[in-house]
Image 1 (spheres, rainbow, N blue to C red):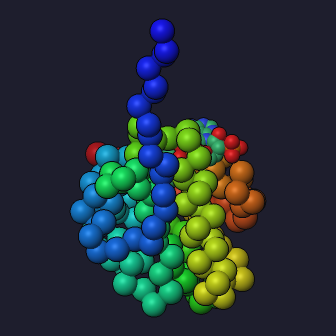
Image 2 (cartoon, rainbow, N blue to C red):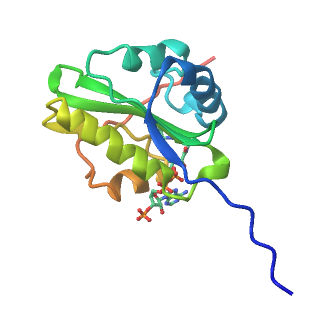
Length: 156
Ligand SMILES: CC(C)(COP(=O)(O)OP(=O)(O)OC[C@H]1O[C@@H](n2cnc3c(N)ncnc32)[C@H](O)[C@@H]1OP(=O)(O)O)[C@@H](O)C(=O)NCCC(=O)NCCS
């Protein structure tokens, strides 16, 4: 008896992020980001808009059909360096993690930033985020300056 064919799974495709993706991107970010670890960069609609609205935007989505599998938000300019690309936010939906989705998004974002004239691309990674650090290292990023977020709790 022939074995039944496994249900066909569509390949995950990449597309430039559009305004129609924003609600899903915002929701996925709220699911996966622990912003309490980085209180100086809150996740919000304006965090998305800042990159998407930028003249040199490098924002991509990974789509499984209509379903959002991941996204990356980047644009030109980092602090005082107008010639650096800033890849600030990236995420894969939990059910799509470990399948190379984020790596593909990193490559697309970096290619767009390079095309826009970036002499380097910067990504800040919180020190406990080992998955993100592994992602960056496997895509050619090396650790640059280490900034430690020193906190002095106010005694009650
Ligand atoms: C970090 C994150 C984006 C990785 O997404 P992903 O789609 O699972 O990553 P990939 O499958 O493309 O893996 C890329 C590389 O990172 C490695 N990696 C991914 N997750 C890992 C983990 N949890 N532990 C160790 N290595 C990991 C992979 O092994 C792979 O390495 P390789 O190229 O040498 O094989 C995902 O875990 C995520 O969305 N985390 C929550 C959001 C977040 O913290 N984003 C970063 C801060 S903005």
